[in-house]
Every structure is written in C-alpha cells, then in structure tokens.
Image (cartoon, rainbow over all chains, first blue to last red; front, side):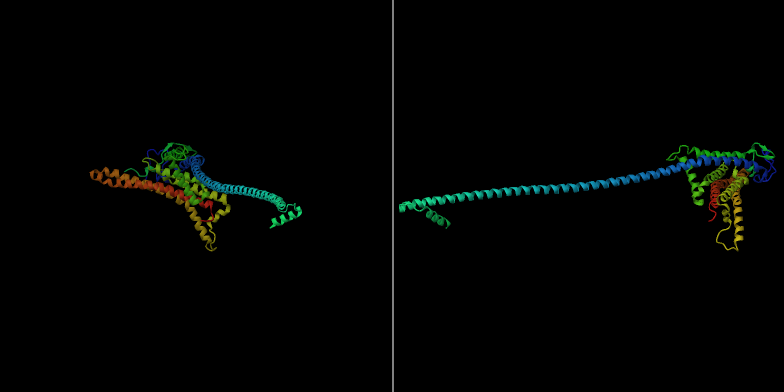
Length: 177
Length: 249
C-alpha cells in the first residue's frame, strides 16, 4: 500500500506496511531497550520509593494519630475514674471522721458524767457519814444529858444521890426504846 | 487523499549504522524518550514536595500509583509488589505511548508490532526466569494441574503449553492491533473530510458526516488508549501471578 516516503531515504524501505518492515526492528528494539530501561531505572530507584514512602508515611501518620487519640481518651477515662474514686474516698473518710468525733464526744461526756456521779456519790457518803457521827455524838450527848438530868431529878425528888451505875442502865434502857 | 499508512512510517532523525544493522535514532525513538520524560516529569515533579496533604497534581500521581498497586495486589497478591516497578513502568509507558499518539502529528510507538512484542516478551521472560529461579522444576507444575486422571494429562499439558505460548502473542497483537486500526480509521475519515470538502458545495456539506464520525472516533480512541494500557497491565499481573504461585490458578 504505502509508497516510499520522501524522508525515508535512510531506511532502506522495501515498501509494505511499516510495522512489518523487519529492517526497522533493530533500531526500534535498541531505542526501546534504552528508553524503557531508563524509565524502569527511574521507577525503581526514585518514583516508586518516593510515592510509596509518601503513602506509607501518611498511613502511619493517620494510624499514629488515631492511636494517640485512643491513648488520650483512655487517659481521660482513667482520670475520671481516679477522680470519682478520690471523691468516694473523701466522702467515706469525712463520714468516718464524723462518726469518730461523735463517738469521742459521747465517750467524753459519759466519762464526765460518771466522774460527776462518783464525786456526788462520794460527797453523799461523806455527808451521810458526817451526819452519822454527828448523830452518834448527839446521841452520846443526849445520854449524858439524860443521865445528868435524871441524877438531878433524883437529887431533887429523893434528896439523895442516886447510884450512877443504875441510873446509866435505866437511861440506856429508855434510849433503846 | 492522504495516505493513512504514512503516520506509521519511521523517519530517521540521527542515522546510526552499527555493522550492517541500522540503529538510527528515529521519530519512534524520539517519542519513546518523550514518553519517558513525560512519565518521569509527571511522577517526580508532582511528588517533589512529599506533602502529607497532597496538592492536586501530587494526588494524581498518587492515584496512578495506587491504581497500579491495587491491580498488582488484587491479581498477584502482596508478594507481587516486588514486580511493582516493572508493572508501573509498563502501565505508564503504554498509557503515555497511546495518549501521545493521539496528539495530531505525533508518532504512536505502540502501533509497531516489534515494540508491543518486545514488551510482551519482557513480561513472559520475567515470568519464566523468575518462576524457574524461585520454584525450580516445580514451576512446570503450571502446565500439569494436579488431580487430573493420567489418561487426559498429556492432552491437558499440550493445551496448557499452547495457551502459555499464545499469551505473549495475544498480549502484543491486541495492543498493536487496537492502536494501528484506530489510527488508520481516524486518518481514513480525516481523508474523507478533505476529499469531500474539495468536491464542491454539496461535498462541503456532506463533509459534516465524516467530521461527526471523526469526533466520535477520537473520543473512542482516547477510551481505547487508556483501556488497552489497563488491559496490558492487568494481563501482566495475571501472568506474573503464575510466576509467583504456579500451583493454584
């Protein structure tokens, strides 16, 4: 079909379809090997590592950021948990302090009351003892007064001194009644 | 009418002859370096900032990377990523070759069978060399699926070998055929436009039809350019999977 081209003088054109001219294959193969070899070299040495690196860095950055966010969330959760724990502890300890204080105050009041009661009881006993002695002394005085009075009555009535021993016995018998 | 085959003609720019062979730097070679330059510029300049939050252009480079990496991982597994530079190079080279070929006046590198065949042979020889280096003779189990009756085993082996050999052929012919046919069709309809427009007033009006056709075909060719690059890439991944995991397919 095709005729010789005006520029095709260097290629020994024998006519026919250009793609089937075997004499052009050497040149095409040589320059394809050189150009495609260059492309493959650039691809494996520079292009693929660079773009692969960019994509990998982005993926690792995203996953790293997600992990950091996850860690921060966990940290916040832990902080909330420890805050709640501290709050509960404080509440419990305040309750304990209140209970303890109440118990202490009650115990102190009890002790004071007991001491007061004991003191009062002691005072009462002392007063009673004093009253007893006073009474005994009074009773003793009553006897001697009664004896003296009886002696005086006997002296007046009988005109003579009465026997002291009989007088005392008679007074004692009268006091016992 | 312009010759629709002329666009596939190789034009030497710097004539080089080694021995009796012709290794001239041609328009095809120039376009190969344009493709490599555009690929490197696109993928290196846009990512030079190494931004954590990408710019639009960096995002495009990353999308291309992720697209091919996803294809490799899905079809050949995570260990297929050791072939990633090769697969990504093939994808970008074929895609840019097809797209650069859509620029009016530009040369379509992938419209030459020797180029697509060389790329296909690169894939298949990678599969064979890596498969044997990694799995030794176990790699040949690829041709003899386990659990088959001994009677039909020879038949299956023959079929498997033929299907393996046909892979580079179909891989290269598909790309070459699509690119060549599409560009010829574009040129033929473009030829109709000029031929009819030159044939008087009625022809000038009639030229509207091929103009509409060429517009639709151009859109289709852009689709084909991207699709064929993807097909080439995914088939490469499937074949590489045989080198990595010959037992199960």
